Amino acid sequence: MLNKYSPSLNTFYLAHFFERYEAVGSMPDDAFDVSEEIFALYTGDPPEGMTRIVGADNLPCWTEIPGESNDYTEN
Image 1 (cartoon, rainbow, N blue to C red):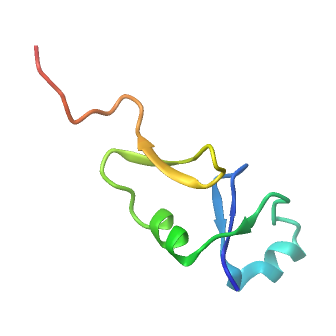
Image 2: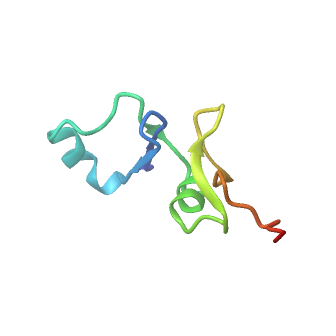
């Protein structure tokens, strides 16, 4: 059984707990199966200066945190 991802909530749901999520009505209607690779990549630590968002394909992706830059120059 694969884990699920909800693009509306940008949240992952663990396969081990599906029965619990459904019993309390917390499994969103838009949750769908994701590969172990997607799950591992986007539930681990984000790359420095990045945050997880929902991409155009409704899958998670990394994007730069607004207002943060590695190109800081002091005037």
